Image 1 (cartoon, rainbow, N blue to C red):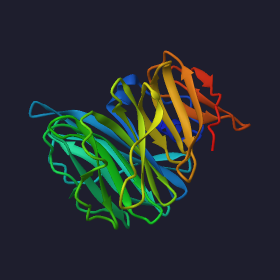
Image 2: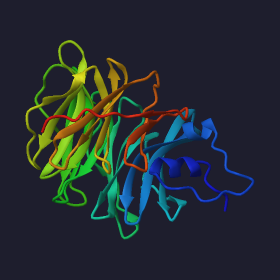
Image 3: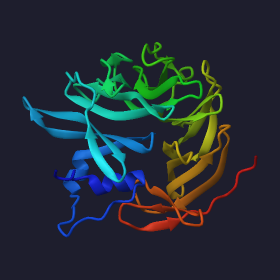
Image 4: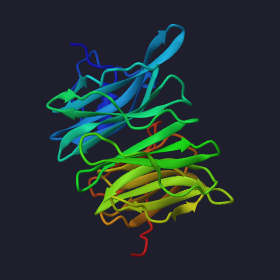
Length: 318
Protein backbone atom coordinates (compact mmCIF):
# COMPACT_ATOMS: atom_id res chain seq x y z
CA UNK A 1 0.00 0.00 0.00
CA UNK A 2 1.41 3.38 -0.99
CA UNK A 3 2.27 5.62 1.98
CA UNK A 4 0.26 8.78 2.37
CA UNK A 5 2.28 11.74 0.96
CA UNK A 6 1.97 13.59 4.30
CA UNK A 7 3.20 10.58 6.32
CA UNK A 8 6.45 12.18 7.65
CA UNK A 9 4.83 15.59 8.22
CA UNK A 10 1.94 14.12 10.22
CA UNK A 11 4.30 12.06 12.38
CA UNK A 12 6.49 15.09 13.04
CA UNK A 13 3.54 17.28 13.97
CA UNK A 14 2.20 14.66 16.38
CA UNK A 15 5.59 14.03 17.96
CA UNK A 16 5.75 10.42 16.75
CA UNK A 17 9.13 9.06 15.66
CA UNK A 18 9.07 8.04 12.01
CA UNK A 19 10.02 4.41 11.27
CA UNK A 20 12.91 3.62 8.98
CA UNK A 21 12.21 4.53 5.36
CA UNK A 22 13.55 2.53 2.45
CA UNK A 23 15.96 3.84 -0.16
CA UNK A 24 13.07 5.14 -2.25
CA UNK A 25 12.23 7.55 0.60
CA UNK A 26 9.11 9.62 1.02
CA UNK A 27 9.03 13.15 -0.33
CA UNK A 28 6.56 15.74 0.98
CA UNK A 29 6.02 18.38 -1.66
CA UNK A 30 4.95 21.94 -0.82
CA UNK A 31 1.89 21.32 -3.00
CA UNK A 32 0.87 18.29 -0.88
CA UNK A 33 1.27 20.20 2.36
CA UNK A 34 -0.79 23.10 0.98
CA UNK A 35 -3.47 20.69 -0.26
CA UNK A 36 -3.92 18.90 3.08
CA UNK A 37 -3.57 21.13 6.15
CA UNK A 38 -3.65 19.67 9.65
CA UNK A 39 -5.90 21.74 11.91
CA UNK A 40 -6.40 19.63 15.03
CA UNK A 41 -4.92 16.67 16.91
CA UNK A 42 -6.15 14.66 19.90
CA UNK A 43 -4.72 11.87 22.03
CA UNK A 44 -6.98 8.81 21.66
CA UNK A 45 -6.03 5.70 23.65
CA UNK A 46 -2.43 4.74 22.88
CA UNK A 47 -2.26 6.86 19.75
CA UNK A 48 -3.43 10.14 18.30
CA UNK A 49 -5.85 11.36 15.67
CA UNK A 50 -5.25 14.26 13.31
CA UNK A 51 -7.87 16.23 11.36
CA UNK A 52 -7.30 18.52 8.42
CA UNK A 53 -8.75 19.74 5.16
CA UNK A 54 -7.98 19.16 1.52
CA UNK A 55 -9.16 20.68 -1.74
CA UNK A 56 -9.66 17.74 -4.14
CA UNK A 57 -10.61 19.87 -7.11
CA UNK A 58 -13.32 21.92 -8.76
CA UNK A 59 -16.95 20.83 -9.07
CA UNK A 60 -19.35 22.66 -11.39
CA UNK A 61 -16.84 25.46 -11.69
CA UNK A 62 -16.53 25.91 -7.89
CA UNK A 63 -13.73 24.85 -5.57
CA UNK A 64 -14.59 22.10 -3.08
CA UNK A 65 -12.94 21.54 0.31
CA UNK A 66 -13.27 18.35 2.36
CA UNK A 67 -12.25 17.06 5.79
CA UNK A 68 -9.51 14.46 6.14
CA UNK A 69 -8.78 12.32 9.20
CA UNK A 70 -5.87 10.12 10.20
CA UNK A 71 -5.24 7.74 13.08
CA UNK A 72 -1.61 7.55 14.22
CA UNK A 73 -0.53 4.53 16.27
CA UNK A 74 2.57 2.33 16.44
CA UNK A 75 4.40 4.70 14.13
CA UNK A 76 1.84 4.25 11.35
CA UNK A 77 -0.62 6.68 9.81
CA UNK A 78 -3.97 5.27 8.71
CA UNK A 79 -6.59 7.38 6.93
CA UNK A 80 -10.02 7.38 8.58
CA UNK A 81 -13.46 8.11 7.19
CA UNK A 82 -14.72 11.64 7.86
CA UNK A 83 -18.35 12.34 8.82
CA UNK A 84 -20.61 11.99 5.79
CA UNK A 85 -23.42 14.10 4.49
CA UNK A 86 -21.42 16.95 3.00
CA UNK A 87 -23.80 19.01 0.87
CA UNK A 88 -22.06 22.39 0.90
CA UNK A 89 -18.91 23.15 -1.06
CA UNK A 90 -16.66 23.99 1.87
CA UNK A 91 -15.71 22.22 5.08
CA UNK A 92 -12.96 23.76 7.22
CA UNK A 93 -11.38 24.16 10.67
CA UNK A 94 -12.08 20.65 12.07
CA UNK A 95 -11.76 20.30 15.85
CA UNK A 96 -11.33 16.84 17.42
CA UNK A 97 -12.67 16.38 20.95
CA UNK A 98 -11.61 13.42 23.12
CA UNK A 99 -13.23 12.30 26.37
CA UNK A 100 -11.89 9.61 28.71
CA UNK A 101 -9.25 8.57 26.18
CA UNK A 102 -11.86 8.02 23.47
CA UNK A 103 -12.90 10.15 20.53
CA UNK A 104 -16.10 12.02 21.42
CA UNK A 105 -16.60 13.62 18.02
CA UNK A 106 -15.63 16.25 15.52
CA UNK A 107 -16.78 19.86 15.04
CA UNK A 108 -16.15 21.89 11.88
CA UNK A 109 -17.35 24.80 9.77
CA UNK A 110 -19.40 24.19 6.61
CA UNK A 111 -21.01 26.28 3.92
CA UNK A 112 -20.92 27.31 0.27
CA UNK A 113 -19.01 30.55 0.90
CA UNK A 114 -16.38 31.54 3.44
CA UNK A 115 -18.66 34.29 4.74
CA UNK A 116 -21.69 31.97 5.07
CA UNK A 117 -20.38 29.14 7.24
CA UNK A 118 -22.21 27.26 10.00
CA UNK A 119 -20.83 25.19 12.90
CA UNK A 120 -21.55 21.46 12.57
CA UNK A 121 -20.86 18.42 14.76
CA UNK A 122 -20.80 14.62 14.50
CA UNK A 123 -20.43 12.25 17.46
CA UNK A 124 -18.20 9.16 17.25
CA UNK A 125 -19.17 5.89 18.94
CA UNK A 126 -18.35 2.22 18.30
CA UNK A 127 -16.21 3.15 15.34
CA UNK A 128 -18.99 5.07 13.57
CA UNK A 129 -19.99 8.68 13.01
CA UNK A 130 -23.46 9.84 13.98
CA UNK A 131 -25.61 11.88 11.68
CA UNK A 132 -24.31 15.43 11.33
CA UNK A 133 -25.83 17.98 13.70
CA UNK A 134 -26.13 21.72 13.16
CA UNK A 135 -24.77 23.76 16.09
CA UNK A 136 -25.38 27.16 14.46
CA UNK A 137 -27.22 28.42 11.44
CA UNK A 138 -25.56 30.57 8.81
CA UNK A 139 -24.85 33.99 10.24
CA UNK A 140 -25.16 37.45 8.74
CA UNK A 141 -21.43 37.24 7.97
CA UNK A 142 -18.37 35.16 8.67
CA UNK A 143 -18.08 32.50 11.38
CA UNK A 144 -14.52 31.34 11.93
CA UNK A 145 -11.73 30.40 14.36
CA UNK A 146 -13.53 27.36 15.78
CA UNK A 147 -12.10 25.94 19.01
CA UNK A 148 -13.24 23.26 21.47
CA UNK A 149 -12.56 21.67 24.85
CA UNK A 150 -13.87 18.81 26.99
CA UNK A 151 -14.55 19.86 30.59
CA UNK A 152 -13.76 17.66 33.59
CA UNK A 153 -17.46 16.79 34.01
CA UNK A 154 -17.43 15.36 30.47
CA UNK A 155 -19.42 18.16 28.86
CA UNK A 156 -18.32 19.61 25.53
CA UNK A 157 -17.61 23.28 24.81
CA UNK A 158 -17.20 25.02 21.46
CA UNK A 159 -16.30 28.67 20.82
CA UNK A 160 -15.88 30.68 17.63
CA UNK A 161 -15.87 34.24 16.31
CA UNK A 162 -18.95 35.44 14.41
CA UNK A 163 -19.90 38.69 12.72
CA UNK A 164 -23.07 40.04 14.37
CA UNK A 165 -23.83 42.70 11.76
CA UNK A 166 -21.57 45.31 13.39
CA UNK A 167 -18.34 43.58 14.40
CA UNK A 168 -16.98 40.15 15.38
CA UNK A 169 -17.96 38.69 18.75
CA UNK A 170 -17.09 35.42 20.50
CA UNK A 171 -19.93 32.89 20.69
CA UNK A 172 -20.08 29.54 22.47
CA UNK A 173 -22.27 26.44 22.78
CA UNK A 174 -22.21 23.46 25.15
CA UNK A 175 -23.35 19.85 25.05
CA UNK A 176 -23.85 17.66 28.12
CA UNK A 177 -23.89 14.45 26.14
CA UNK A 178 -22.92 13.42 22.63
CA UNK A 179 -25.20 15.94 20.96
CA UNK A 180 -28.09 18.32 21.66
CA UNK A 181 -26.07 21.51 21.64
CA UNK A 182 -27.24 24.57 23.54
CA UNK A 183 -28.38 27.68 21.73
CA UNK A 184 -25.24 29.71 20.82
CA UNK A 185 -24.68 32.71 23.09
CA UNK A 186 -22.18 35.53 23.29
CA UNK A 187 -19.27 34.85 25.62
CA UNK A 188 -19.74 38.38 26.98
CA UNK A 189 -21.90 41.37 26.14
CA UNK A 190 -21.57 43.37 22.95
CA UNK A 191 -18.57 45.60 23.64
CA UNK A 192 -18.71 47.34 20.23
CA UNK A 193 -15.15 46.34 19.36
CA UNK A 194 -13.95 43.32 17.36
CA UNK A 195 -13.28 40.09 19.31
CA UNK A 196 -11.51 37.42 17.24
CA UNK A 197 -9.73 34.02 17.20
CA UNK A 198 -10.80 32.30 20.44
CA UNK A 199 -8.84 29.37 21.87
CA UNK A 200 -10.15 27.08 24.63
CA UNK A 201 -8.34 25.09 27.31
CA UNK A 202 -9.99 22.86 29.91
CA UNK A 203 -9.03 23.75 33.50
CA UNK A 204 -10.17 22.58 36.92
CA UNK A 205 -13.91 23.11 37.19
CA UNK A 206 -14.41 24.50 33.69
CA UNK A 207 -12.45 26.11 30.87
CA UNK A 208 -10.32 29.12 30.03
CA UNK A 209 -11.00 31.10 26.84
CA UNK A 210 -8.35 33.31 25.26
CA UNK A 211 -8.94 35.61 22.32
CA UNK A 212 -7.75 38.85 20.72
CA UNK A 213 -9.79 42.03 21.16
CA UNK A 214 -9.31 45.71 20.43
CA UNK A 215 -8.57 47.57 23.67
CA UNK A 216 -9.18 51.06 22.25
CA UNK A 217 -5.67 51.45 20.88
CA UNK A 218 -4.59 48.05 19.56
CA UNK A 219 -5.30 44.35 19.80
CA UNK A 220 -4.23 42.27 22.80
CA UNK A 221 -5.11 38.93 24.39
CA UNK A 222 -8.04 38.72 26.79
CA UNK A 223 -9.23 35.78 28.88
CA UNK A 224 -12.37 34.64 30.70
CA UNK A 225 -13.10 31.65 32.91
CA UNK A 226 -16.08 29.31 32.33
CA UNK A 227 -17.57 27.44 35.30
CA UNK A 228 -19.81 25.19 33.23
CA UNK A 229 -22.65 27.71 33.18
CA UNK A 230 -21.36 31.29 33.12
CA UNK A 231 -18.28 33.19 32.04
CA UNK A 232 -16.30 35.52 34.26
CA UNK A 233 -15.62 39.09 33.18
CA UNK A 234 -12.99 39.46 30.47
CA UNK A 235 -9.49 40.32 31.71
CA UNK A 236 -6.30 41.31 29.82
CA UNK A 237 -4.13 38.22 29.42
CA UNK A 238 -1.33 39.43 27.18
CA UNK A 239 0.62 42.58 26.44
CA UNK A 240 -0.51 45.11 23.82
CA UNK A 241 0.07 43.67 20.38
CA UNK A 242 -0.62 40.04 21.32
CA UNK A 243 -2.73 38.24 18.69
CA UNK A 244 -4.06 34.92 17.40
CA UNK A 245 -3.67 32.53 20.36
CA UNK A 246 -3.51 28.76 19.95
CA UNK A 247 -3.45 26.21 22.76
CA UNK A 248 -1.70 22.84 23.04
CA UNK A 249 -3.84 20.82 25.45
CA UNK A 250 -1.06 18.33 26.34
CA UNK A 251 1.64 20.86 27.27
CA UNK A 252 -0.88 23.53 28.38
CA UNK A 253 1.11 26.09 26.42
CA UNK A 254 -0.45 29.10 24.70
CA UNK A 255 1.37 30.47 21.64
CA UNK A 256 0.48 33.87 20.18
CA UNK A 257 1.74 36.37 17.64
CA UNK A 258 3.56 39.38 19.07
CA UNK A 259 3.80 42.73 17.31
CA UNK A 260 6.06 44.41 19.87
CA UNK A 261 8.63 42.97 19.67
CA UNK A 262 7.71 41.41 16.34
CA UNK A 263 7.81 37.67 16.81
CA UNK A 264 6.06 35.06 18.94
CA UNK A 265 5.02 34.84 22.57
CA UNK A 266 4.02 31.97 24.84
CA UNK A 267 2.93 31.23 28.37
CA UNK A 268 1.93 28.13 30.31
CA UNK A 269 -1.45 27.68 32.01
CA UNK A 270 -1.57 25.49 35.12
CA UNK A 271 -4.51 23.11 35.80
CA UNK A 272 -6.15 25.78 37.97
CA UNK A 273 -6.23 28.15 34.98
CA UNK A 274 -3.52 30.52 36.19
CA UNK A 275 -1.03 31.87 33.62
CA UNK A 276 2.67 31.42 34.32
CA UNK A 277 6.11 31.08 32.69
CA UNK A 278 5.82 33.77 30.01
CA UNK A 279 8.28 34.32 27.16
CA UNK A 280 8.48 36.46 24.01
CA UNK A 281 10.98 35.81 21.23
CA UNK A 282 11.75 38.46 18.60
CA UNK A 283 12.01 36.79 15.18
CA UNK A 284 11.12 37.59 11.56
CA UNK A 285 9.61 34.09 11.20
CA UNK A 286 5.95 34.38 10.20
CA UNK A 287 4.89 30.73 10.51
CA UNK A 288 3.73 29.59 13.94
CA UNK A 289 6.55 27.60 15.60
CA UNK A 290 6.40 24.05 16.90
CA UNK A 291 7.47 23.74 20.54
CA UNK A 292 9.96 21.00 21.36
CA UNK A 293 11.48 19.84 24.65
CA UNK A 294 15.17 18.94 24.96
CA UNK A 295 16.31 15.90 26.92
CA UNK A 296 16.84 18.11 29.99
CA UNK A 297 13.31 19.54 29.67
CA UNK A 298 14.34 22.93 28.24
CA UNK A 299 12.00 24.26 25.58
CA UNK A 300 12.89 25.51 22.13
CA UNK A 301 10.88 26.62 19.13
CA UNK A 302 11.32 25.03 15.70
CA UNK A 303 10.30 27.11 12.71
CA UNK A 304 9.19 26.04 9.25
CA UNK A 305 12.65 26.70 7.75
CA UNK A 306 14.25 24.26 10.26
CA UNK A 307 15.81 26.94 12.48
CA UNK A 308 15.41 26.68 16.25
CA UNK A 309 15.36 29.23 19.06
CA UNK A 310 15.80 28.55 22.78
CA UNK A 311 12.98 29.87 24.94
CA UNK A 312 13.84 31.67 28.18
CA UNK A 313 10.85 32.04 30.46
CA UNK A 314 9.97 34.82 32.86
CA UNK A 315 8.20 33.21 35.81
CA UNK A 316 5.03 35.15 36.59
CA UNK A 317 4.06 35.80 40.22
CA UNK A 318 1.60 33.33 41.74
